[in-house]
Length: 301
Image 1 (cartoon, rainbow, N blue to C red):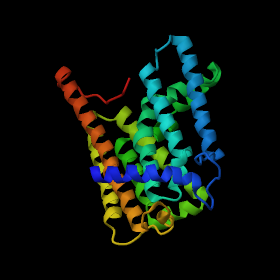
Image 2 (image 1 turned 90 degrees about the vertical axis):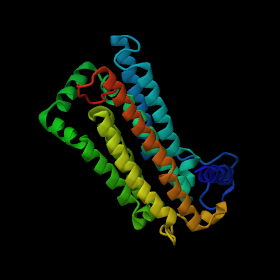
Image 3 (image 1 turned 90 degrees about the horizontal axis):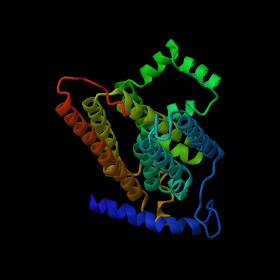
Image 4 (image 1 turned 180 degrees about the vertical axis):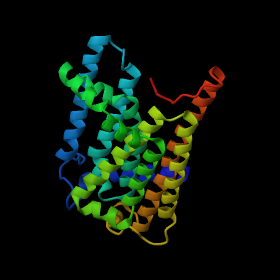
């Protein structure tokens, strides 16, 4: 584990300055290459603006820190910064040229940013960003029977877990993954599906699941993503020819780049899911001490 972490850290430390000097499609100049794709930056800024306006309006109405607490707001901001950093920082550019960096980008978005965003109570904040009449109309729509049925089905923990797992496995089919490197539309769709299904997954666990159930779904996710990571790590040949094509520029063979990418999914990614599962189990044990017979979903306040 330590050897893998040291190799990844060393690789990124060497890759970041190299990116500024790279040739071909890399930006020129002294600064590191950032990505400002309007199809990515616009939704990021819009969601942050909605959250900020809604939070300010809510706190003016209910009192500062009420309804959505400081911890929720801090969680949302941290999650937004992680997601924005993963999708726009030099890490994103590296991910188009180095499989290991691409995998780190995905893990940050799905396993770090997504749960923090959910903890921030984004829907409640977003509603308060609109005028009262619009807010009431949106509330009626979201509480309508069809909307509740669809949302209820999508956020059932088993359904959300399967949808998120399918997104991960389908996009890691070598032909699909390689295509995202050369086709920007597919690349955007890949990231969108990863983020949206991750948000559904964490929403289902944090808002609708019993702590032990949430731990079980995290265990299942840890197992299947670990299996996929192991398949990449121990594959005897290169499966992602296009994604690993530039690996030699960073002192790696294509197979080594693929193996490191698999190790990122397998080890650090697995540790995040395992840590979250242990947190849910600890919460269950704490609740048992207070309410030994009462069942309740987690429902982070």
